[in-house]
Length: 473
Image 1: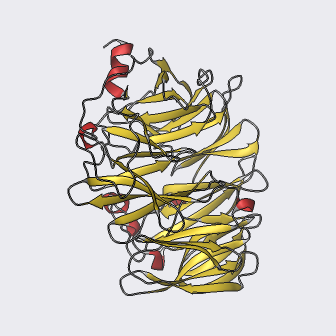
Image 2 (image 1 turned 30 degrees about the horizontal axis):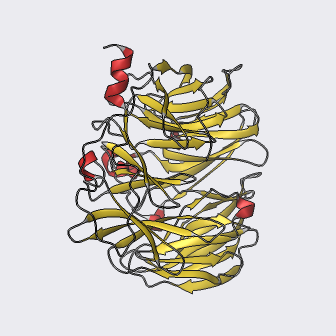
Image 3 (image 1 turned 90 degrees about the vertical axis):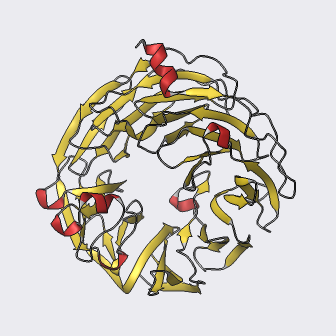
């Protein structure tokens, strides 16, 4: 198959009907919305290739900036590698295999203030349960978790292991959480560990789960019910462990932290958005004071918050009888701003398990794997901006990374780069894979025009000459 043909199999961009405005919440859904056949925009450019920097054992789980310019850390559950990701320099500085007893499941990694790295996750062992159970987020009560720290030169500085305990079943992606120079290990209790020494600085009785951290505060779920819900949330002073405030929850569904766009640094996180089903609160982190409280009613689920000068915009999914699934937006008074039906005829919203990702000015909606298409909706007015078709047979969730005037979308064994805000195709970049169903597991802009990716086969890839986009938001 010629390269240009392969590109069309993996990706296609369509704009049929995408200039239609969103409908106000109170309006009826016009006939034909989301049902017109899309009109192809333009052929994708011929595919280019990534440069292979190195290959690691197992899927790449994270690419983490070291704080030392072009030096990054690539992390799998078996190995940590310091690697230069730049146009002029693409080489491995050092690599360290995790000890056999500390091989991790889907590890999470953070740069430390001293430019080293902390890696944490569930330990792969017979006590962790079967691989299928772990992939589904089910862990036995005696499962173990570990955190390992490496210095900038690759020296293993310390490790801490603990029982997974009261965290029980759940997704591992948000564990552990780091605030300033402290990493927080939760479960049967809460332990704050100084990343500079590996020594605990304070503990709090549990069961307890860290939900969020910022502005010197960690927000935790406490008082677990028999169904696993948290009956309350507490804000702890991250440095001392002193409880600053407490709020009760309705205990109907799991409380979760809402993502906020644009992303904020730890010093900018003066508020925290929490959701419990169709309700959301914006809390002042140091006092627990409720800044905003929004109740939307049944059939609605808040997915994220877009901070704007005129006030926050809450975006979520909603289901209406006879109309199906839509993305909807509300202000902090709970008033509807717009409602955009999902384009089921183009393969979005055909599954009850809908995924979404937040861009700076747009929401990306698609079915949980396998995804057939990604619907891009502008947050300001709720207009359809584009539909990007992806390889529906691909078993990984699509990855989306914005940078200035470009957005990169990974699905299957190719990465597509589109210009913002037009979503015109710029280039597709092929990823080397040993397996047909392999693909990118991490996608990260290193700098303007420099795109890095990690894959399911352990490749660390760089494309250092990505053409610039047509503009910026």
